Image 1 (cartoon, rainbow, N blue to C red):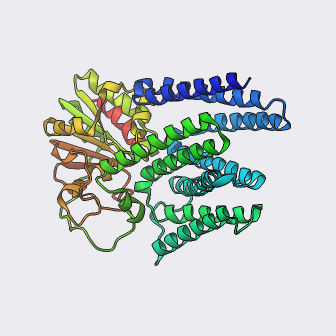
Image 2 (cartoon, rainbow, N blue to C red; image 1 turned 90 degrees about the vertical axis):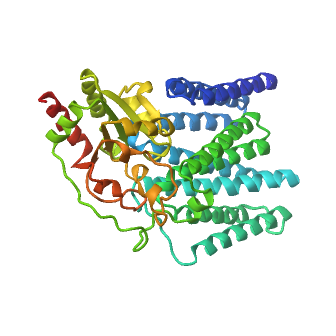
Image 3 (spheres, helix red, strand yellow; image 1 turned 60 degrees about the vertical axis):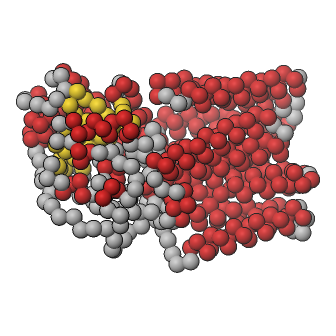
Length: 458
């Protein structure tokens, strides 16, 4: 029977790898997710089979059923705009589960030699940090706590002290100086949980996608380490896949923002500032729906720039309808996607795919940027920081150096926005004072609905 179970675990690993490969493209992402889910189902079935003779088998089955119900209900109920929060929450659950398994194994069986002690302590530390850090990320994205950095004097020193104390406690545990019972391991875990909170609190909402990706990689490492501890190959493979993909994604996002990871983690980006930056002169030009409809109707090329404002307003269906109406008028319509638009990579792609916007109309930043100079109208829907020209022109701006979409090079710019408030980064956008820019204030969904009606009358 053990041979069959190992073969099932190997099949699970194959499905995981095929699933990750197919996640590389929006066109195949759905089937990739299904393959990975099938692999997980096989792994759960194999685990239940392996434990069917033990009293714990029934508990495993009950836990799996409960998780299936809760996970399915959450996935069906959650809105696409809240998908980043759900990813953060589910990621935290994975890290917490790995930490609990390692801590329970330590208390029940002891460290089991140097290799076992290192694997267990590493899993508890990394898994606990990922769990508490992911919960803070969830709370920030859900806006149950403020999204801006929460900082206080000496915060970095406190974080370093917590890390050093926790590492020292780990060494003492491995050496047997603190005993083997649940209390020493509980204190070690508590320190790690506090460390995760301490590290994520000073990170602003603009950088939360990078944090989620990094915590996801940490969860993968914790799962892989617990696989070594339990001698479970599928945990090792799955954890390694998650750890590697999360690390690569973190690096790519840092590169897309042209900021080192250390600056993201310790720079308190998005903190309210009372000085810095350059004063920008200009007048805000407010437009009417009829003005924008006329501008779009007689354009030859329109580039739509979606951002988090689109997601909040849940206006993706209206955007697709706008695209359809413009295409009927022989207007060339394209979508410009910044790699960190929204609240996590791929957020805009998912929203537009949900509205059946064709994939071939979505262009990445490197491809679409040269096209703005030949574009009649750039229609910006809530994308603030990723269109801010200060990233190119103001060395004193915290955005300076971040690659942006070249919206300001279009002949006409229309921005749909609720107000003149800055975005996640807390930085004013000079684009809104550009003489070529017209502001259409209001909820994006309502504005687009009115715009659709006005187009019919042009």
